[in-house]
Image 1 (cartoon, rainbow, N blue to C red):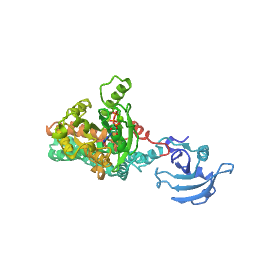
Image 2 (cartoon, helix red, strand yellow):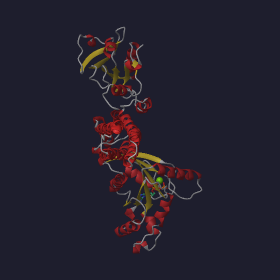
Image 3 (cartoon, rainbow, N blue to C red):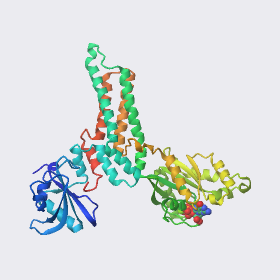
Image 4 (cartoon, helix red, strand yellow):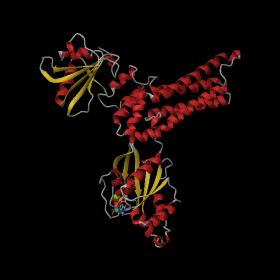
Amino acid sequence: MLERNDQTICAISTPHGVGGIAVIRVSGSHSLEICKNFSTALNKKKIESHRVYFSDFTDLKKNKVDEVLFTFFEKGKSYTGEETIEISCHGSRFVTQQILDLLVKSGARIADKGEFTYRAFMNGNLDLVQAESVLGLIESQNKAAAKVALRQLDGVVSKEFEKNISDLTWCLAHIEASIDFIEQGIEVVDNDVLIAKLTSIQNSLEKLIQSYNSGRLIKDGIRVALIGAPNVGKSSILNLLVKNDKAIVTPVAGTTRDVIESETVFDGLKFNIIDTAGLRDTQDQIEVIGIDRSKKEAEKADVICVVVDATTLLKNSPEAAVKGTPEITEIKETLKQVPDRKDVKKILLINKKDMASEAQQRELLKAASSVQVNAVLMTSTQLESSRAEILEEIKKTVGRFDYLEEAVISTSRQLEQAEYSFEMISKSLRELESNMGAEFVAMYLKESLVSLQKILGQVYDDQIMDRVFKEFCLGK
Ligand SMILES: Nc1nc2c(ncn2[C@@H]2O[C@H](COP(=O)(O)OP(=O)(O)OP(=O)(O)O)[C@@H](O)[C@H]2O)c(=O)[nH]1
Ligand SMILES: [Mg+2]
């Protein structure tokens, strides 16, 4: 019996279901031998790599199953690094299942989730960051996410980590040599040189760690909760942002009872917009639950758009229309009900600006400038331009996206290891600066180094492998 990793594996690599064409991938040292059972075209003397062979696919009794294309990749020249054959057949569930059954009868086994990529990793075709980027690319739903994944696949992020690993190894080697030579009074490396080198590694790690937030937002989308009193126009704003009548809009306060989520893409980025029930004191049981959910959504959001109604602000201050001195108590009251989390950005949207004169709008903005939020915007769901203005403001407030040209890390696994590595360097720097024992410095640096090696998969760890590959789909 062959070891699991030496067995030839097969799986459908295209989406499951009915389609014009489906691709079945076979990978492992017996791929060609197995496929030869089903095709006369493959029984030629010399099968060339990267060539396509058109042929009938016949079962073991020579009954025709389908007409297919076999693409052959020789060992060392395929995605997995193993001998691989891709069978493009007709995308019927029946046909694909029959082909898979026949492959299995001839000695292949069905691949586990992500097993093709796992093999590519084990054969050194990809490091672990690149393997994760394959998943990122498969899952990408917008331009920015695809770009981040492609840059990781190109090795941009890996190179950054590799440089840090190499510099860290240099530091560690010199520290260990100092430990060996200390008794002879030989100084192998100057402390200042080490400190400078370690600080530079830390700077690089810090940048990567900071890029995670943007990486996460790019990958998962920016979560935006619309929060405010009833009737201010939250549902109308959701509909405007997602360009669809997703939520019910009526002049009745308390229309929205539940959380409504919808997504939109703007400037290559994904935004998940969450409309919620208007916040107010109510006896209505359903509404109470809705309001509770609104607050929970606000807690999970990256950005809270606090929505207020320009007309109410002006109305509640009778002389405002004339003198232009709107009260902002309404805004403050709403803000009080919004969960106060440090890392969540707040944007105040003063909606229904179409109902206010230009002078009134200026006054409202002036009055709102004293409110503690990250940005203030006048909006109207009657104006299409408000959509771009709101989304642009969210994008600006939430973070940097010019990272796209640089190395961006996008999985929590990479982040945790990078943070740990950073922390260990901090400890070693403290030891160095206080001229403490080189043994401690070496110990921390080793920990730091192992963390970085784990990011790229240079240190084998079952748990890490499980975590990375279990998220994959079948056939990848
Ligand atoms: N003039 C004007 N009316 C608006 C604007 N936005 C919303 N409205 C109107 O305001 C009313 C309430 O809008 P909704 O979107 O249902 O308000 P909401 O905040 O979701 O209300 P609840 O679900 O009750 O919390 C509706 O009659 C909308 O047509 C706007 O920008 N200008
Ligand atoms: Mg609503």
